[in-house]
Length: 156
Image 1 (cartoon, rainbow, N blue to C red):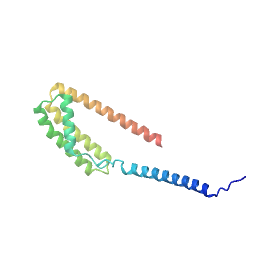
Image 2 (cartoon, one colour):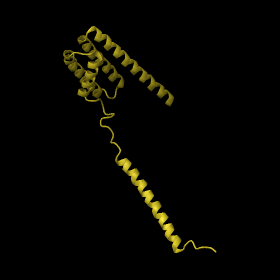
Image 3 (cartoon, one colour):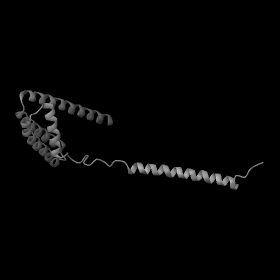
Image 4 (cartoon, rainbow, N blue to C red):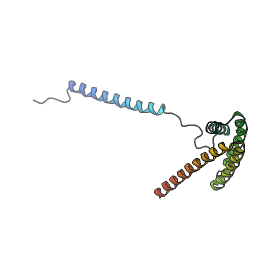
């Protein structure tokens, strides 16, 4: 004997399945929506120029103080030099936004001037260590530059 699939008993069962499936879909949708709402907002200032010269100065002075074991007197003399260099760097960056080559050349000259002023304050041992640090930094920059060139070449 054949049963009628449209009987009231079957209708109730199909309605229950439909309701459960609909509720599961709604819960999944809410979970996805909540994930988007609670995601972290993008960090401020990314890709919008250079960081604040004060922050650059503070970070660089702290690094040099630890790496070169600077005295408090040396820190007092070096801090304004680094601040001037950071402010000049920000000014160069803002003025020469379109011309990357000119900006890079100006930044390099600014950094060399700042470094020579700093080296005048350092002892001979500190100068040697400072030069080694600079050499490592330049090597890392060159390595990154080569990786970028290789990546661009691969993309072509």
